[in-house]
Length: 273
Image (tube, rainbow, N blue to C red):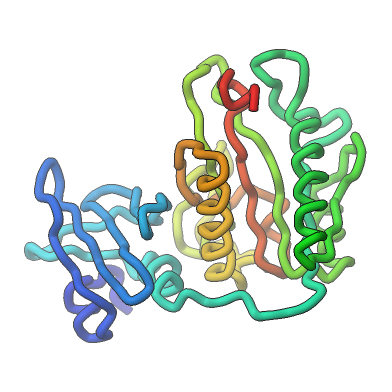
């Protein structure tokens, strides 16, 4: 199998859309206009956009023979799902498990104001979200409803026991002592063979296969949709949809699963809101 695919040839052979060079300096930037949306990427950069929304590729696109080439895994795990735009099946009594991150002795990051920890904010967020989703026809279960320290394995098992259709883990970020960093990040599990966007010291063995990898496309599309909805409501900076392999709360899930970092508690403006 080819490792790199010439995007111009691929789009013509698959009638996928129109590829255009939209900038040349400081590096070439291309747009692919399709029936589903517009994919924008630049050579030697992991950052890409889909209809203006930022996400991270696994490999930097390359110029080969004067033409843009994209890695096979990015074509399979990013571009093809975007072009297919898999719809969530219509279903009544859909079940969602919301996971308020941290709890108990596991306090998470501390607010810049020093009067609260991440565990308190995630639980408050989860309870508010549960009420909204319930009124919209979801069956909602929380992995914790009080200040309890729940293990990652138990959070995964909880979703399995409740036959969840979707798992969403809620967290907040920190860049302390940097008080300027801000924005929204949304994570899903890294596909097999692809390097992670964030590693945090984890070995990040690209050959590892986890149960949740069976939902790579659904994870990615769900992450994009929720990320876009949150940006629309909060007007936060877009730090993109990202991939990580160290997130134990996602790896064992047998359903679409994402993790949201809802802003920086080290940033006074975001911590206040």
